[in-house]
Image (cartoon, rainbow, N blue to C red; front, side):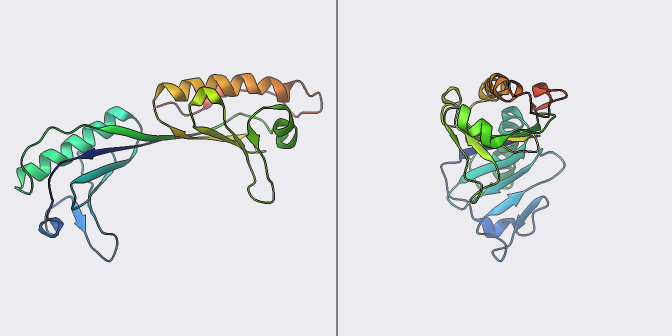
Length: 190
């Protein structure tokens, strides 16, 4: 599964109170200090702030996030809340989850793989900071589940899968390790 977060700026103030009764929009200050847009033309939910900042969260790709943010800007212009403007969409974060397909000896992994933080009394997974991922991390759990977090470009997900496949040799080298198969390609790639 992949979750993409992207942002855009309208460069103008948005009177959110005028969205209360507009179909597809939700504005309720008891919930949050922004409006939401979610309708049958969006792929995910867009948060719209009075400052003109918009956030798309929950799409499966940058292309879908860009579509949603452009659609939100168009809808706001159509109802007269902003003047039509070209927006610059910025990818902020990609989070992807997957399953290696077997259990992992995290303690051993943490001692043999560089740049791994494992403090079981603080967090049940190992946090792997591969320099190839440019600041992003891979959370690795004993169950074989993995989470890629903080990816700033789509190609880093593919790079992360390759890094994980190389790291796999560390736990495969241990004959005690319970390994029946490995399928790093099963990781969500959108």
